[in-house]
Image (cartoon, rainbow, N blue to C red; front, side):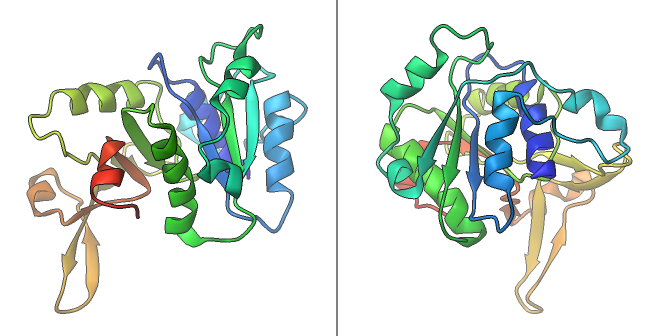
Length: 222
């Protein structure tokens, strides 16, 4: 939960004007789900145990935050947008939409956890883009704006966009560019570590994946 809240804090510093943060708890065996609520209400400050030059990207946002909690069944029905609007009304938070917490009630794995959120988004049919982000990521304030701007300029409307993933403790060190290539003979993958290798990419990492929401309806979920 510490990593997840650090990730959430960095997303909440985004300069992009209209987005909604959805945090899925995949039946954590500890107090994570309750900690998320306390964090939103401002009674729990996310610890920053890791020394990193990315400190400025994870400064805490003003609390309390408007939020709403859904069970897996409620999320699959699309949630309650009317109730969400009421959560934002009369608050001083800069968020246009409340943070959504989904409790799956069961560990559904990486794909299953993401798919609960994706099914909710498709049911609501009010999002142009979806950004899947692993909870151990920290993003810079302009990341979301850059992704949306890049996607809007692509002639290929079905484009899937990844990101440049840097080392947490040494941000100047590139871990990989967007994704990896697959060796079908050996059954192995190798990350794209040089810009000139990007055209060899076979898949974009699901830990940082940005695309139009409609693609998950047209093609399928994870």
